[in-house]
Length: 238
Image (cartoon, rainbow, N blue to C red; front, top):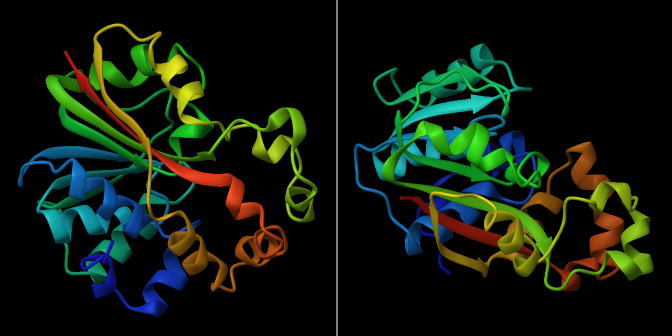
C-alpha cells in the first residue's frame, strides 16, 4: 500500500505519539477495504494518545468518541485542540472496555486498532459489553497483532530476546479469532484476514526511541517478525 493519508503526518508526530506499530497505516489499510460513510458516529476503542481518533476525524470525516482507560482525556483533548479538531468532530472519553459509558445502539461503528486482543479473547466479551452499543446494521472494525500460525506450543527463541511467553499470550492466528467470534450471536463475520502492512508498521515503531520500542528491537532484528502479522476482523451487527 502507498498509505497516502498516513504519509501526511510528520515523522516527529508519529514517533512522539504512537504506542506500537504504526496504527495510522493499519487503520488506512483497514478503511481502504471497508470504508465508513462520512459523518458516521464511531467509537475508537483503546485509542491511546488518540492518533487513530485524529486520523478518523481529519481524513475520513467521522464523528469520533476517542475512548481509552490509561491516557487522560484531558491530555488527549489538548492534542486534539492542537490538531484543530473541535468537539463536533472528536470527543475524548475515559472508559474501561467492560464498562463503557454509552447508550445501547449509539454507534454506527466501533473501531479498535491494536487493543482488542487485551479484552476480546473472552468469548463472551463482544456480545455482552460491546455489540449492544452498535446500531443494527452497524459495523465493528478490529485490528489485532497475531501469528501467521499459532505457535504457542513452540515459540522460537528469538521471541525471548524481548518478550516472555506471557507477553505473547494474546497473539493468535485467524482461525483462533474466528472460533472466538463465532460464539457471539447476532453478528455477521464479513472477513478475518491477514493485513499487508506488518513489516512497514513495525519498522515505524522500531525507529522510535520509546523505551518499549527499543526493547522490541532485539527480537524483531533477530527475525521474530517473520512469524507475526496483523489481523483485520470486520463484523456487522445483524
